[in-house]
Amino acid sequence: MDSTTSTQDSRAADGAPTAAETDLNLKLRRQSSLWSDAFRRLRRNKASLVGLAIILIFVLMAIFADVIAPYDPYKTDFAAVRQPPSVQHLMGTDKQGRDILSRIIHGARVSLAIGFASQVLVATIGIFLGSLAGYYGGWVDTVIMRVTDIFYAFPTFLFLIILMAAFGRGFVNLLFALAFTAWVGLARLVRGQMLQLKQREFIESSRSLGASDARIIVRHLIPNLLGAVIVAFSFGVPGAILAETGLSFLGIGLVPPTPSWGIMLNDGFAVLRSYPHMALFPGLVLALTQLAFLFLGDGLRDALDPRMKR
Amino acid sequence: MSKYIIRRFIQSVFILFAISVITFGIAKATPGGPFGFDDPDIGARIPEAMRKRYREVYGLDQPVPVQYLNWLRAALQGDLGVSYGSRNQNVSDILGRTWPISAQLGLIATSLALLFGVTLGIIAAVNHNTLTDYLTMFISVVGTTIPTFVLAIIAIVIFSVELRWFPVSGWGTPERMVLPVFVLMLGPMAGVARYTRTSMLEVINLDFVRTAYAKGLTRRRVIIKHVIRNALIPVVTITGPILAGLLTGSFFVETMFSVPGMGGAFINAAANRDYPMIMANTMIYAALIVFLNLAVDVAYGIIDPRIRYD
Image 1: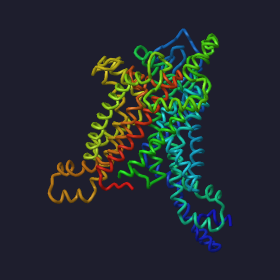
Image 2 (image 1 turned 90 degrees about the horizontal axis):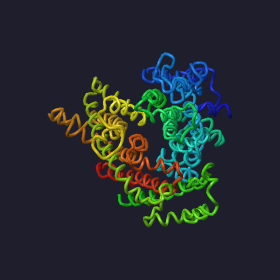
Image 3 (image 1 turned 135 degrees about the vertical axis):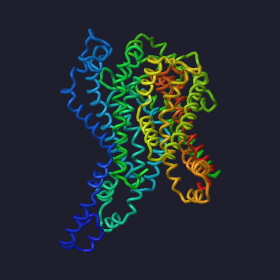
């Protein structure tokens, strides 16, 4: 029974398919595989490939930060404070003589860690609660949806400020604050998809074959809404990076001397008129990551969800 | 329609109540209190008798639910309490001073964002797939991706420090308003431009437009009399969120340009655990968002008779 339900094909339940049928089936499925199809569409979109390339560079920068960075990002040099860009320090130095380029490279590690880790949390909570609400309906759905209504009306950045001010600065607190304020959108998305999917024939046939709720959700429903989740994920990462930078810039995000772009912006903004390079470089790098993620996200949306074209 | 409005209104009041409970709970449930009692440096030097007196005067010695009910009762009667940060001032007085400034900033920025955004969107759509279109959309992509605080830094460096056209900070005179309004407006303007363009392109291909051409109207007349009128209806839906966002989301702009509005005051309040200020600001922001969204939905139903609410 397991082997037939996993084919997601109601016809297979009528009896064992012949060898020729199986062969044809496999061929058809390979041709229309969501992922290869999506990848082909993504490759046609030049802007999203540029975005992807920029993001890959940032990821490599984050992984190999220790090797690439010309200086130790924490090493102070009070003989060389607030130096403008030069051959020794390509982006200059900050108020404690630390090399800004090295801090930006290590900052990529901080930003991407916050961005991806928070979205993994968001996806976990969002998929779990969204599937519960969408699949079971009834009072479970009502309770979860009323909670999302409240979160939805709560201005996100305001909520973040209150949480960070109350629980204090730091990496872990920030991570949970970001997840806590951002799961709502994904939960609603997953619920909506769930409501549509569970009406479809392949779910009904799977249920008529005796598959359990858990099996239907995990094996059939979640794989089918993965595309929408990936698109939401790709827009969520830059959102979280932006929130981290903004909160750190306001002094309630990460704790100095962490090499966070937001903390660097804060340091630089205080002396913007005299030493503009201190804020400009981290600011431009942040803007570049936002642009890259927007390009990639737009491309992924068109590639993975052709019906959702705007 | 009136049934719908009443239902939405009751829902909104419930959501605001929930938000007030959550905010109060977060503020009270966490370690650390106001007046520097828990500050390692100052706290140790405050005598026990003085702490006790302070707690009694501000009602902090009572259980949290009682404190909440006291706050709610007073707030419903218009008494928002005394600011913990500047103890000789009522929260209402501080808000009376800061709110008009934030409202002015938000309203000017929203009007300009709509005016320029709609204009750019129309120009792009009318010149679809020409250089003008691509250039407009490029501006709009840049406007969407550059974070407000990075844009502020770039604007200050170029227009204040290098060109010396505008002062860096303050509010009240027109030349002081230019940069904060510009920085606050650009993101929403870009969004409106993209939205208007998409909406225009959808309407341009509809049958009634072809009919208008067929009866011999000039292109100019068709665009102005028929296309724009219909294309702008969906744009109404995003004005509510934009207005709410700009009235409430000016934390960065107000802090960076030293505009003495609510945003800057809120950041201070959050950092100093000034509970009465945090509560008052949060509730005003939340109420604005909830009721502006309601107002837009109602307005949408009036403008477009095809929309029916049940």
